[in-house]
Length: 562
Figure: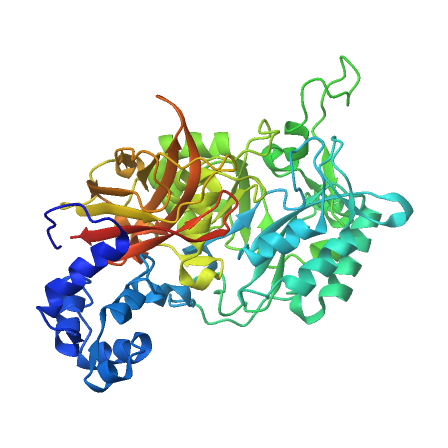
């Protein structure tokens, strides 16, 4: 990392200083000197002379310099502000991970109450919410299904005043947009409150609208593990719902089995089936005073049951019960509170459970404003389907967007070996995980073109860098505040972090405007997986609260880790 004697007036000046150090008095930077810069500063250790010359061809526009195989300062500036110098590894903008592992080996981008565009009580249900989630790479969508008039099932948040949309329109929308940004499988998680008759209508719509995209039978797959892989299931839509039990009858059990054959299956998890009930405020009238809540029977129509292949919803009892009784094609759902309790008390068991089975975690019903939990705490135990309210802005969705921009934004991220290895045990609540933690140095140098608030007043910006991982890897550091400078604030702040499990860690850069002694307002942020960080002098693109690009707003940083 280059040393400076005084603060430059702009990022351009900072880059000019770097350029002059390697140009060594020449009017242009020769290819050999550019290669030295790539090796020494940018840690592009595989770069060779051919790499340097290709950068000259790409970013240099002065013909005389090109002919001499050298780069002028303007060409160097173009290179330094290009995607090639982004803090996010551009090789990770395409699918690069092994997609032939069994489904439980992946984090899967998942949405909760996907149909909602606002809160859980009076918010609007809208088809565009499904389009928006799919375009963000979401691969597990939730559909709350209820009986509607004229035998048309509807989708809305039960027991509330949220608006209703038709089930058939939701399925048509999914069919149109399912594979727009990702070829990998979509899971439709049905929270099913419909009568047997309207479930048969649902099944007919799923078959007729989704056609060949709907998975209707097990695959003859060769994936290592019991469930098929994302590659095996490319361009397929899976239905997650209860399934009728088809056990071998004995004479004694015949009576008990009849109800299942008729389509009755005991509610598998109060947490899951009562999601709507939970999110209803206490004052909401639904039951006569003094009446007892009965454990309801859920009637499952055979036509719908037959469409459940690899994602059958079952009740979670305990980790030992799952180990002895759960089949690979069965999965559990639980609310965040229960999952948090299990993660704290039995982290090791939770990790091992998630090596074999899919588990879905969803926000507490008490989150009526559609707020979210921090998904990191459940990724830490290997839960694949960590479902968030995609319509809600803030830290949890920033982390989700950061996690799933990796691997080409395809919605599937291969879990790190620490979570999938049967050779070693891992409990994320323990702090001692590696003999030698990774040391990360982040130097926040400057900002550029930060968005000015509506008031038109220049910002007093500072940068907060956060690391999100297992508990002992979660830290935050702040720069000082620069007064009255939105165009080119200069911080030159060194931040050091010690990270024991970097492969689970996310780095979040958050720019804030100091509005008072103890108050500040969000300006922009960017979240990147540690494993996608590029070393050297890099720029950090900033995103708005709703995840949109704030280009040309960015930060200029130096990254080093070992």
